[in-house]
Image (cartoon, rainbow, N blue to C red; front, side, top):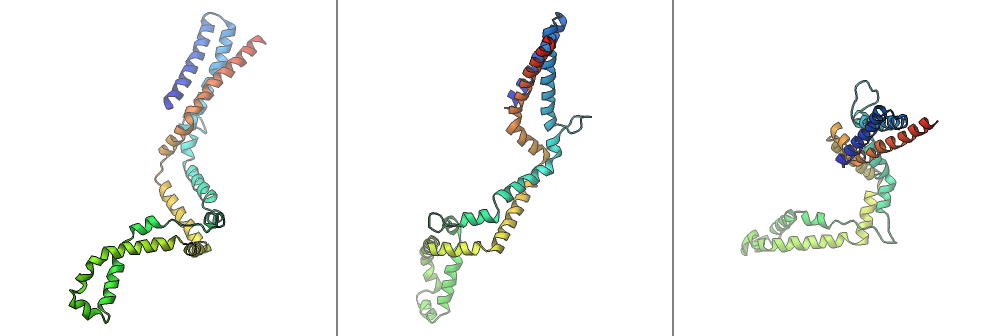
Length: 238
């Protein structure tokens, strides 16, 4: 993409320069005028594109994208927070859809939860209850160990089933929708965004913008040469 941009700019400037030289050498006023105006348009547009990304000595305002690095980061944060993570949008996300409560998919989280402590707590309860002596007669807590994995799997299945009910999701939505909870969520999102933006450097921002638009800006050089040449043609005819 970048190579295409350089080629368009280079070819346009070389062609217009060749027109100027041919017009001058062969004493062709029309060709010289068209070439000169075209070169002027192409070169100034190329310089304008170049000045967006690079600092040019003695040219005030050049290198505007790296120079506005901090403003660029601030604009990204403002866009994300004010357009996506507003209280209104969060509430809208959690609102009812088609008359049914919005369900939060918690299955992946539950699948990763370690429920071994829950089984260990159950064993402690049994051991310290009136059934503790009877348990000791059958091998103690080690006798319950084969039950651990089935217990964990059954607990996860039950938790997933509970989280998929409308009643649970309504309760969860009511808790999340509280102003203080939304405020904390927005604060945490802002903190995450700030941390990610701190990883950006002026060079990274420049390259990011270049990849998005610089190849297309190469056409400014081409059209600058075309319209400049047309102006030259009109000027010579007048």
